[in-house]
Length: 253
Image 1 (cartoon, rainbow, N blue to C red):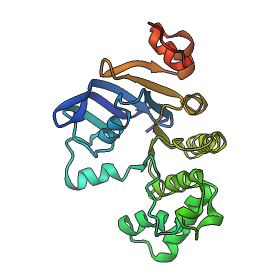
Image 2 (image 1 turned 180 degrees about the horizontal axis):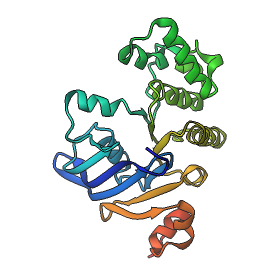
Image 3 (image 1 turned 135 degrees about the vertical axis):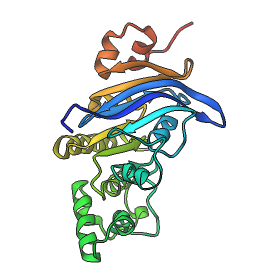
Image 4 (image 1 turned 60 degrees about the horizontal axis):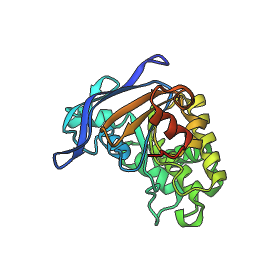
């Protein structure tokens, strides 16, 4: 695929739980090499949408195509092949507390490759080096800061060299400096390794810092209400509510 081509296509997706729709008839695409952000207020369905995109939840309707293959209908080896093309960093990092950073990053290689231990350790160290943590390979997650845990989780998500990384609330719980450092890491990985990022967040400073394009979800209508560059939506959206959201303005009755 060439840069700018569609790498993910969400088509007429209705997402929810137990038959109750949180999002209805949502469609958008993600282009190869871009940092794409999903944002909106609390309860609008950001993380629910991400879970449907990575195949954790079956949709109530619609399709999610990754590299042209539908993760909704794929089964067996075909589904496994799709899952191998992306990595995921969950909101709290989800590192195994009893394992060192090296062991955490090595785990996907142990499960999904036939490399020997020396080769796996080399790859794991390389991934930790990419996120600035190679000197902490022997540390447990509890022995490092929250921002470092997030970076270690990104290193683990990159273990199998995916073309796409999904990040759920990467800046949650971080101080402004750690959040800014994480933003710079995302940009560097996107630009140097040509990784496509799909990021769920509501942190406006991070959105302005990293997003090439974004979609804004609105809980009231259960759909996308704006798509584009966040700076453009902030300054020139035709929808007053969208401008208020991006400018952090209080809506007065």
